[in-house]
Amino acid sequence: MKTVPWTVYAPTRHKEHWTLPDGLDWKTVQLKVKRLQMRIAARGHGWPETMPKAPEGREAGCEASAAAKLKKYRLMRSLQWLLAHSFYGKLLAVRRVTSNKGKNTPGVDGVVWKTSRQKTNAVKLLYRRGYRATPLRRVYIPKKSGKLRPLGIPTMRDRAMQALYASALSPIAETRADPNSYGFRQRRSCADAISQCFNWLSRRNSATWVLEADISACFDTISHQWILENIPIDKKMLKQWLTAGFLDKGELFPTLKGTPQGGIISPIIMNMTLDGLENIADKSVPWYLPRTGNRTGVAVIRYADDFVIRLNQTIRGWCNYHRHACSSRIFNWFDSWLFWEIKRWLHRRHPNKGRRWIIKKYYRLYRNNLWSFHATQKNADGKNEYRYLLMAGRTRIVRHVKILPPANPYDPAWTDYFTYRNKKKMDISQDGRFVQERGWFLD
Image (cartoon, rainbow, N blue to C red; front, side, top):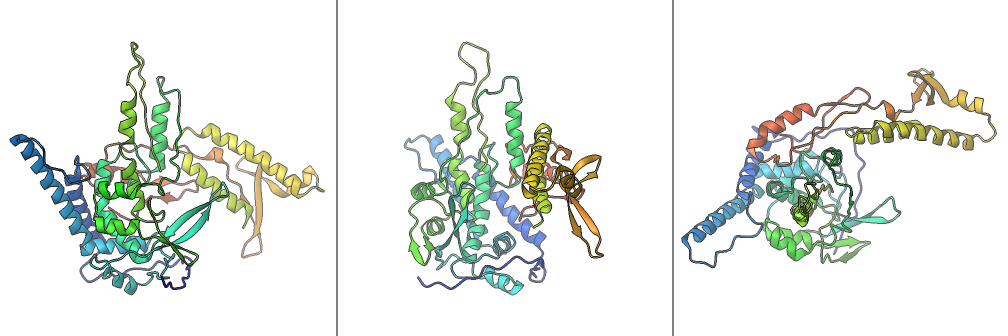
C-alpha cells in the first residue's frame, strides 16, 4: 500500500474557530443530536444486543411479545441509521476529532484538519457508500515497566466516522452498562470509582478481602466474531474497523482479533464486552452466610525545566486526583518523605558544602514553615523571584458526590439530576482558580 509521509504538528495556543453555515450554532446542533440519542436510549433499554428471534411456541402471548420486541429493536436500529447519516451528527463528529488531544496527529495519509474550510469539507467525506477503512499507523508508547504499548492511529476520516457511529452506539451502551462501571463513560470519573470503593470498604460489615484484577491485553484479545454478533451497530462499518490492519515500518499486518487501541469507538466496545461482569459476580456467592445473619456478597467496581515547577505540577495533579478520599494522613506522610528525599539529594549534589550553606541557599520561611524548599528565578526587572515547593498536606479535602449508579445522560428523566451535578461541579483549585470539567459534548 502506498503511503504519504506525515508530519506531527505541534499544538498551538491559538484556537481555531469553526464557522458554521448561516443559521446554525453549536447549541442547536448538539440539541438535535441529543434528542436523537435520547430516542435511541429509550428503544435500546432492556433488549438484547442481537435481533430478537421468533418464539418456538404457538401461544398468542409469546408471538405478541416477540413482535413487540422486534418492532422496538428495528425502531432503535432505524434511529441509529438516522443519526449516522444526519448532517448535525457529522458536524459534531468532525468537531470531536478536531478538538481533542490527538487533533494534530495524522494517520498513514498524513492529513490533519486544521482550518475551517478543511473541517467543512471533511463533513462531506462522512458517507457510508463506498467507504473503506484505512490501515492504522502503528506507534509505540513507553510504559513505566519499560515495555512498549502498541497504539494504532487511524486517519482523520476514519476517526470522524468512528465518532459518528459512536454517537449512535453510546446511548445503548449507557443504557445497558453495569451500574458501577466508571471508565470511558460520559459524566463519570475516577473520583466516582474511588468514592464507591470508600462506600463499600468503610462499613463495619465490609468485605475483608480485596481482589484487584487486570485483564491482560483487554483491547487486543476480544473476539471479532463475538463483537460482530453482540454489538448493535452497522456490521459493515464495524467489520471494516476491526479488520483494517496496521502499518508498522512500511509493512502491512492484519488484525485477527481485538479492537485497535487508539480508535474512538474502541472503549465503548470494550465496556460493552465487559458489561454483565457485575451481575455474574453478584450471583456467584450468597448474600448472607449460611446459617448466620452475617451479610456478605461481592461488590465489583470497574474502571478502565525548572525542578520546582516540574515537581509542583506533579504534586498538584496527584493531590487533586486523590483529594476526594480520606487522604490527609497520606498527604502529610508524603510531605515528610519528600522533605528527606530532597535533603539527601541536596547533599549528593553539593558534597563539599556544609549543612548551613545548603539551608541558606535552598530553604526560606514561607507560610509559617522554616523549611520551605524554593528555587530562585530572575524576573523582567532583574529581581529575584522565589518559587516554593507545594505541600501536599495543605490540600483541601473535598468530598466527591458519587454519581447514582442508574443515572443515564441519555434518559430525559435524569436531565434535572445532571443539571444539578453540573452546577455543583465548579471546583476551586489549589491556587484559587475556578475550574469546571467539560467534555467534548456540552449539554
